[in-house]
Length: 182
Image 1: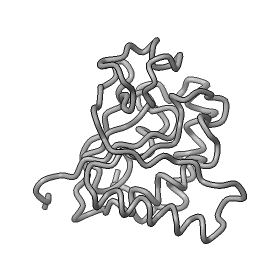
Image 2: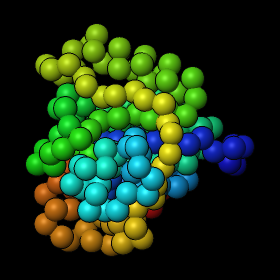
Image 3: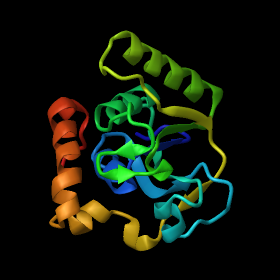
Image 4: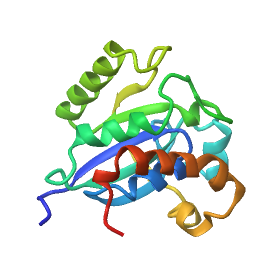
C-alpha cells in the first residue's frame, strides 16, 4: 500500500548514472529520474552540466514511499555508496557537477540530513571530514531520455562495469534486506 503523497528526495553523489543504478533497486523507491540541480541557469544542456560551467550538480530525484523506506534509510544508502569526503569529486569524475549534495525539500529533511552527517562524523566512519552540502531544493531539470535508466540499458559498457558495478554490489551486500524483490 502506497502512502500519500510520495516524498521527493534530491541527491547528488557523483555521476547520476551511479545513483540511479543504486536507488532504483531500493524498496520503497517508486521512481528515479536523473538530472541536474543546484545551479543558477534553467535547463542546462548535458554539455554544460558535464563541463561544470552550469554550476549544477548531477543528481537523482527520487519518489519515495516513506511507509516502506524512510528518508534516513535513503541517506544511509546514499552515504554508504559514495565518498562524501572528496570535494567536487567521485573517483575519476572531477568537477563541481560531481559534488556530494543533499537538496532538502522540507525542514524535516534538513534536520535529518544534518543529524545523519553529525552521527557519521562522530562515529569516525571516514578519516576525512564529510563535505556533503545540505542545501535547500530549488529546481530540478531532468536529463535527456538517453541518460535515464542508463545502467539497466548499458550495463556491459566499461564505465558501468568499472564504476557502477562496485556500488551496486556494495548495496546488495550491505542492504540486501531493503532491496526490491526481483
